[in-house]
Image 1 (spheres, rainbow, N blue to C red):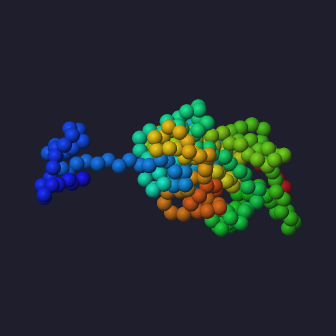
Image 2: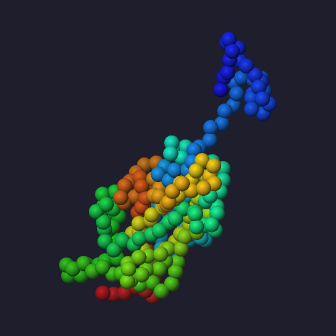
Image 3: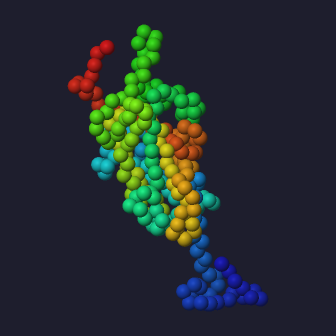
Length: 234
């Protein structure tokens, strides 16, 4: 920032805030408070994974959430203190829903091909049967009574205002992944609202089913290598 008086730069001013020889001075403008509606998601987990894929880390594939303010500025440094309290209860929340049929909004956002061969159904003599999954152990559990699914997720804060969430699934199919985050005040010390959906993917159209740029996102888990033990003839 240049500050002049009668055409001459002033300074050097207060030590530590001015340039070595005064004006121009260095001015640092930090991002404002974290705004969930502008936060963006990226990472290999959005590109689709194979059943049982635990990635290079052994923790699963991951997605990264970049915190941003309401003006689109990326947060830098460590995530705000408010998120770090509560033993992870205040981290971004990821929840999954398993699709038994292809929803219109999924087709509108991603096209019909995303459902072909990825849904738990089969055609027999012109009749389509939906085969609900039966799973006895994690990392993913399916409740036959409520048709809900729970997925083990490990979320960690990392550098430059980001969170990284690891997950895996032994169940192939099409999932909806909802990502929620709480807004914080400018000091980063307290929350200013409840959990809200984040915006979406960085660059290009996202995989969201309801809106190309908003949570929930569509995640496809493809079958792993064929197993003779679990193969069947029908």
